Length: 243
Ligand SMILES: [Zn+2]
Image 1 (cartoon, rainbow, N blue to C red):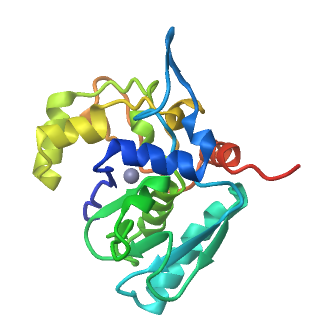
Image 2 (image 1 turned 45 degrees about the vertical axis):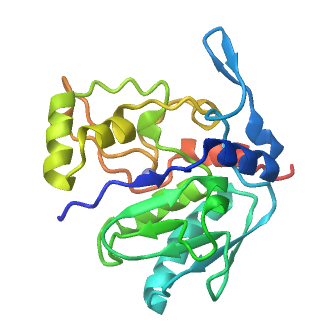
C-alpha cells in the first residue's frame, strides 16, 4: 500500500483573529483551561466549535466527479448521529466548509478557523484517492477537524514513548518533513480546551498511526479507520442534542 500523506492542520495566520472568530461564533469556545494550578483564558487555548444547531454548508470546489463527491458525503454523514448540526451539501462554491479533493495532501482548518480562509479558498483538501482503502478514514479525519477536533496524538496526556531520531528519519524519508515540521505536527502537545475535555484516546480517528519502530519499547497505534466511541462522546459534548 502506498503511503498516505499524514494530515496537517491549516494553522491560522493570526491567533487573535482565530480567537475572535471562535468566540463570535460560539461564546463557549472561551472555556477556561486549567494547567496544574494555573488558569489560562483565551488565545491559543480556545476551542473552535461551531454554534450548536446551526446549518453548516459544505461545498466542493473544482468539483470532483459525482461518484467522488458522493463517496465523500457518505463518509461525512457517519458523523451526523453524534452532532447537532444541519449539514447541507450545496452546489456551487459558497460554503462554510469548502472541500477540494486533489492528490496527494490531506489538510483542513479546525472548526471556526475555516471562517478565516478567503471566500474562494478551500478549507479542506482530501488527497487520498477514492479507490484507496483509507479514503473513508481520510474523510472522517479531515471532517473531524472541520467540526473542531484536533490531533489526538498531541493530546496533553498522550505520553507517547517516541523514538525521536527514528521519527525524524522516517518522516524525512517518506514525506520530506523537516525536523521542525515533525516537532510541530507530532511531538508538540496541545493546551486547548478541546484537547482536555476528554481522556487521551489512542483509538481516535484523529490519531496518526504510529508504527512500533517509531517508539521505544512495545508501543504502537495502528491505523484507525472508524470514529471511536470517545470521538463521538466529544462531538456530543460540543454539539448536544436536546434531551
Ligand atoms: Zn489531521
